[in-house]
Image (cartoon, rainbow, N blue to C red; front, side, top):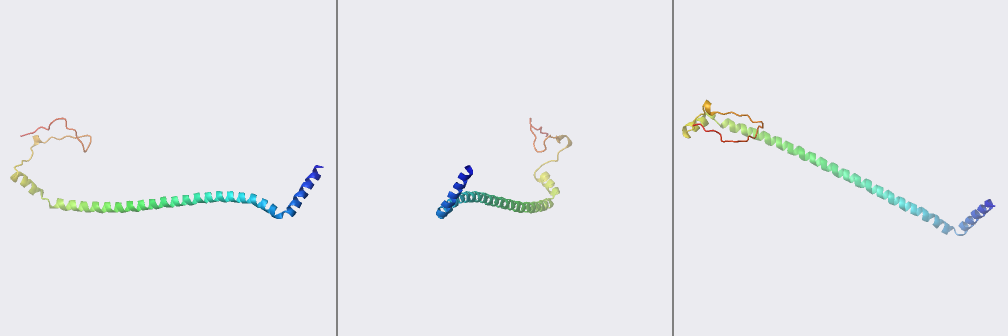
Length: 140
């Protein structure tokens, strides 16, 4: 009897489908449209995320490239300025006559060379900084 009931139900659905083919077709399309719209929304969201990731990657890569170019440019400018400064320093030093400086200091300014007892040497632990706890003795 159950098989007969299933057979009758199937025949009735076929008759309804034959009588109302447009209604049956719309009913089938509604379910597929919902599935398609949700699938399209999911695909669109995924596509948007991929595009955003690619654009962010390209932007980051462009920033990195620009930073590298700027670093290279600044490094070459630094080297050029250092060379120029070294040449300028050599030119200045080569123009200074130390004998003339000593002569002017002794004759014109009345300075005297330091004697052995006047020279005090010290060594600090740090090269560029020394704490002075008392006055340096003056020798006349």
